[in-house]
Length: 360
Image (cartoon, rainbow, N blue to C red; front, side, top):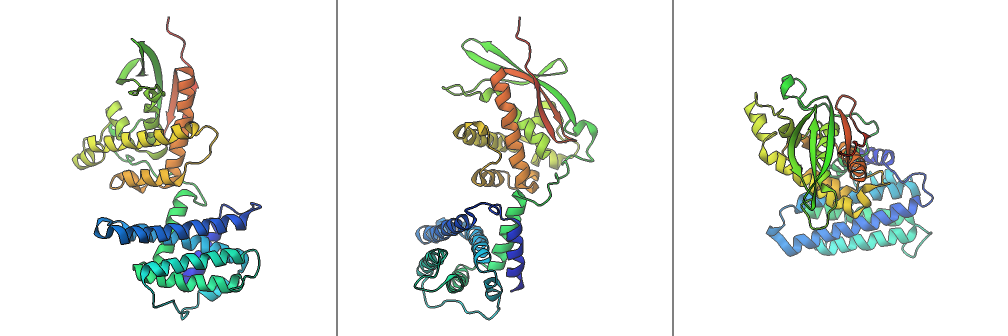
């Protein structure tokens, strides 16, 4: 099982807990959490049966996450044990029903974590790690998930969010007709005006108004009238925004398939849904003010929403940058009630320039 050694080395490179004083404790807590997630997935499958079609994909992900924490904790505590785990003929636990097996896995993890502080009644870290590995292999066999495949899936996910080198993917419309490309450089004004008791936002570029006049569309005003900035952030950092293409009339009409599948109404609705979901999460977190990351659950939800569209090839870290940068400019626009913003798709920059003078 040379794949396990490769996975252990790759997991070490993606361990963001390194350098923390509680490194081991964080890994142990993560392992316990993932063990619970694995058991929870099996419980759902047992309860829902045919009504839970996503079971295998979820189990593939959960076992991959579990494996990451397991090899990291084991490698930190007893580096030589990883080589033992990689022995091809090591047996797997047998003679147990699937749910009982997963409960055994949870119990084995508990004993391993207990052994972190020193030898326990059932043995030290090495013995407990070997036991976890034995039960884990059996549990994977029961669910039809290959641990090597789970490991590869985990690394793809981790590298999508935390690559060793950040390189933006190419813009989707490179090579398209110039008039069908998202503008590479643009300056836009967000103008706020009163309309009765409501506040509306108007977009303006080169002296021309465009798009719809937006309000917050909610009983408790929250500034969502400025949410078009999120679409511009997606255009800059993802090279994707069916909404912006519609606003600026640069759909790829010369290719009917792309025009319908990638730039059409359904794609725009998906993007609006992503914007609304991200905003809902942002409201819970102070509009991401002071935060340098987006939680994985949100990124995962977004990636599931855009599955089947060209943007589903974009790594998670670009989505994270797009969301955070969009909220940074959103907070500035809301605070100053409008302003000038520049987009530079070549340099992947979205900037708030200055507030607009108050209307006379």
